[in-house]
Length: 256
Image (tube, rainbow, N blue to C red; front, side, top):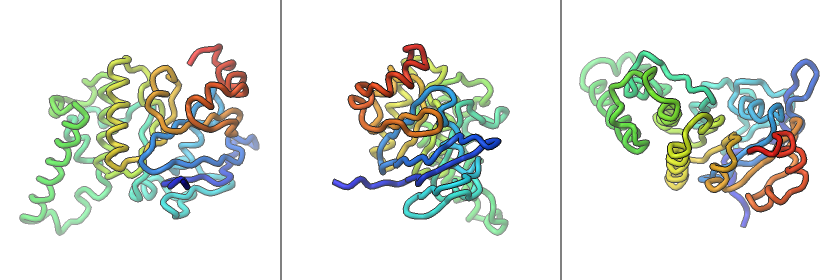
């Protein structure tokens, strides 16, 4: 059965001072799947997702999303298409409450001046609030709706980042180390939410180091080293690949 990809890269390359941080990278993210990218530090993982999401400009190759070439579009345009990036260090508006952080997330929130008058504005405001509370309830942080973001734990901030992506109606969430620094119980909770979201039609491209936790949740894995994909496949194929063990696990000193 032929894979149904929501996103593909074609020979994607990125140079920094003449050095290839990405060297002809080809990956595909299947619809409604969790796709994982792993590799040692400096392998090009974060450069890859930054280039896909428009924060870096590609020097060669293409990024195709839902059959459309989105290579080097500005990040806000890529986000409007449904590709939403979350960061290793969450970037909420710290003095706003959890609910307020979700309400300011949609790209078109409050843009139309004519909608700011009368019942149309009130109706839209109510719809956004209802949507935000549904998302918070799904993520299990609805009890924190009126708490300022700076008071949240690291794991709660990661969930808030996901909530902001869902407010933007993300089709593909690209997330950098979503369980870094998060205790194991909450890590499993976050990844269980991801699994449920993929069943609801959201796809994920994930960069993560904590293989002991994340491998049981993902559908497909790409391994990078020195800016290139050196292996791809499912968990069993990756863990039994000698090159992966030598290049990735060896570089990490045997740690995951």
